[in-house]
Length: 276
Image (cartoon, rainbow, N blue to C red; front, side):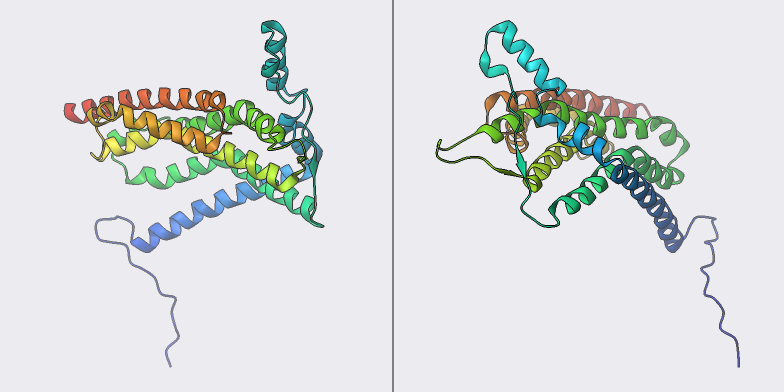
């Protein structure tokens, strides 16, 4: 009776990795990324007071830097409407396990956000061996750029869009007979949705670079579609911001600037391809 042997996949004759070896390699990178997220989420969970009092709930308080800046401008310019969140929004919890589940979910979200540079680096390590030396040289700094754009979008939303959204949505009333009582879960969902959406939208130059490299997008197409892009940017700004024109402009301007930068990135990519 023959003994069973562990099945192994022989390497291809040219020395390249097999499909299953690629999957195994990808799994190891994903596992390390997941471990990083969990460890940082645990650290965020332990730092509960700082996480909630000084970060997550801070944009609704008068002491938050953005609120103080707008109120300062309100005093200097004599425009009372500019002062935002002078009266902090009061949050309530109506679920028995609501505060605990919110604590866990927020910790995981913070773990993911902080882990983004490491996750991108792990994915880069997986992709890098498949690139030619010239492509590797041209892609130097990709991890820094992708991570930087995402974190810039998150910080932009956190320090600007979130306080404006809280001020508008938290104080808006259809009638003086209806009092706002904001649920904790609703507040957290709004803050995390806005920040994540902004982080993803700020990756526009990276998306344009990829589409230009594969020949799907050209700078000529982007220039011809400026008007359509402007409409789409305004629509996106309206989705992730409160329905007031000021907030939409504050989001739309950097996105349109990123669009113009993306045109130049696309042009540079095409030029480099033609030089080869």
